[in-house]
Length: 337
Image: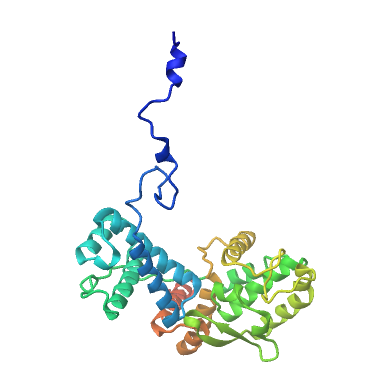
């Protein structure tokens, strides 16, 4: 006679073990174990690949920009397949309105506008290639957003930040040189960490920078930054590399170039050491570079060229910051302010 325990371990006749052994290539599954209606189709993913390839060929977009475009397009493609059961090229204006209502009703206008700009670019390209007959983005309008002005450190705060690294160590010397060079030249963080030794013209006092859109510009860096670069090349970089060979100007203890994330960590670390409580960003010194130049009478067009801005309207945000700073100084120090 079978015991109760025997009954509990007997396999059920209806079980179908073969179904659980299907290869992933035939049945891709989500974490919940269900077939993925939520995933974009191969056709949509292929269209995204072609879109990113075209952007790379036509605009020379940097890797980080392409990854952001791909991420935004893939998120929309997943939503479209889940909620509307459609491929990307079948998108309508109603689909887009529903997507932004569902996903961006409570997000910042800037986030929604960034994704809308990516989608507009995708469908405009698809229309140009005759892959669609009508642009679903044609009547969509960007969300209104207040102007955003960068937070800028005062000249005294910049001095405190620059003085924070311990320059008696090779890594501290590297960090001081990075901070000095960014403030002296206004480089983007990506341009700073990717800078190669051969792109630094010590005799001429200029950097050869390849920026957004694969465009090259020459940027001067001044005597103060030059002295720190010379000291770093003599007393810091060789000690960090310990015989290794690397093209990057600013290297890590393990070899290889610094990353944007590493530099952002350094900014926060040294701001804390310098008792700087102002809002910060990875581009804090780039913003300070532009604003302080304008405060001291630099021409807006010159600042545009130094920053590598394609459109002068992007540079004009610093004129507002400079004016606000001057108004604040006037109010603080003028007897009738």
